[in-house]
Image (tube, rainbow, N blue to C red):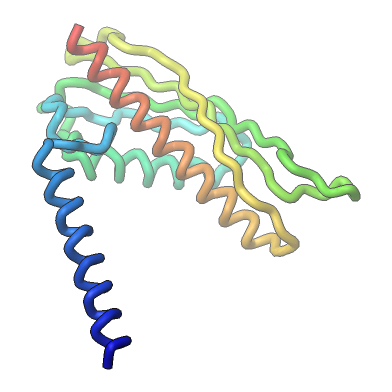
Length: 176
């Protein structure tokens, strides 16, 4: 009986502190960087997504991730109504073994997409032109299909960081 009351008290205290922490964080206006959906009111039209890398599957992944990212933040618009036109060019994807065993087999690899992002205004003039790189590490095993999936997942993750960096950079650029 005493043990049961003690565990109930412990659980109640834990729930109380979790709720208190959430209330404190929300009351001070804390927001995670790069996650706010209401900081930028401009709309984009994606005119091109180009893959110059030899791996053709990167195009589909890139296409899905880019559209998903801009849709999630409510930043997409039809060409006539958009404030800016975006062009994405995947120049290449560098890969490298990060960790090797004594027998020279890869344990972890690194993937680093190099994405060129160009922003044009309604007149077609280039306002912003920058290449982004971001690397992500993924683990390699003897399961080939699993390795391919982990490589694609790492590519997606790197793309998302690149898109967050772009959004932050472009918002700062337009506020100058």
